[in-house]
Image (tube, rainbow, N blue to C red; front, side, top):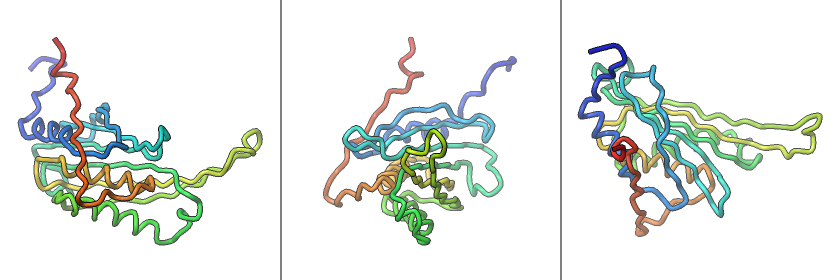
Length: 197
C-alpha cells in the first residue's frame, strides 16, 4: 500500500452503509449524506436529517456509523451508532424535571418498536435557554433540547435504527407517531460514488 491509499472498506461495513439508505422515513423528514468523522474508528459514515412542517425546520440531527473490525472498548461488537438530535421546544416543556427520562424513553421505545436490536446504549439529554442582551435584547427567548446518544446495533441491517432515530426526531419536533396502519415510503438516495464516471 502506498502513502495516501485508503484501505478498502470491509464488506460488512459496505452492507451496513447501504442499509442506512434503505430506511423508511416520514415525508416530514429530509435525509442527506454527510462527511463522517475520521478519527473515531477505521471506517465511518454519516447521514443528516431535518424535520419540516410547512417549510419550517423543527428539528435536525446526525447519525454516525462507526466500524472497527477489532471492536472497541464498550462497543460489544464491531459497529457503533452515534446519534445527535436538536429541536426547539416551548420553555414550559424544557423546565419539566421529567423531560430527560422521557426523551431517553423516546429513543429506546423507538428502537424497540422498529425491532432494531441494540446493546450498550448511553447518552445525555441537554436543555438550553438562549436570552438576548444589548442589541439583541428584543430577540425572543429560545429553548432547545439536545440528545446525544450511542449504542451498538446487533445486526448489519441498520434501516430500523435509522427509522427509529427519525421517529425520535419527529417526537422531539412535536409531531406525533403515525398510526400503525399508515405506511411510510422508503427514501432512496444515490450514492455519489456510484454515479461518478
